[in-house]
Length: 183
Image (cartoon, rainbow, N blue to C red):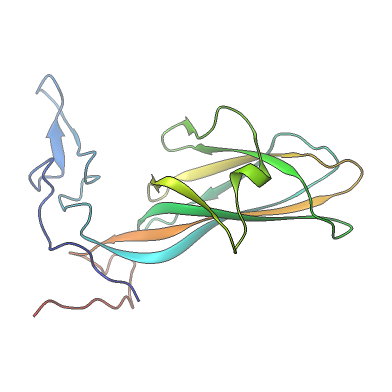
C-alpha cells in the first residue's frame, strides 16, 4: 500500500516556487531540493518499483551496453540492488558492470565492478549507503563485461526502490494508489 509522507509543506529551499535564483541573481534555475515541484521532498507517495537490465554475454565479451529508461510519470529512488548470473550450462556466471546515469552524465563507479561486489541476491541484497534519485524519463546505461570463457552468460541486474509521486497530486501516474486522507 502506498502512503503519503510529510504534511504538505512547501519546500524550504525555494519557498514553494520550484525555482531559485542563480548565484548572480539574474537567472532562475530549477530548485535542486524539490526538483521544481515546490513541495517538501518528503511529501511523496512511494510506490515500489524496479529497473531491470537483461543481457546475454558471449565468451569474454566486453563493454556490452544495456540502456533502460525510467518512466515519465515519476522520479525513481534507487534503494538496493540484486542480480542473477547463469552460464549456459546452468552453473553460476561471472560478470563485471559499470553504471552511468545518462541524465546527469555521472558514471557511478571509477571502473568495472565485479557482479558479486555490485549486487546481492534476493536473500541478501546490496543496499546503497544512501538512496540515489533517478529523474523521470532519465536513461541509465549498464556496460557489462563477461568474465567467463567458453560459454554464454545470462545476467539480470535489478535496481529496486520506489517511484516518488507528489502527495499533492497523486493522480500523476499513480492511479489506484491508496492514500489515507487526513481528517
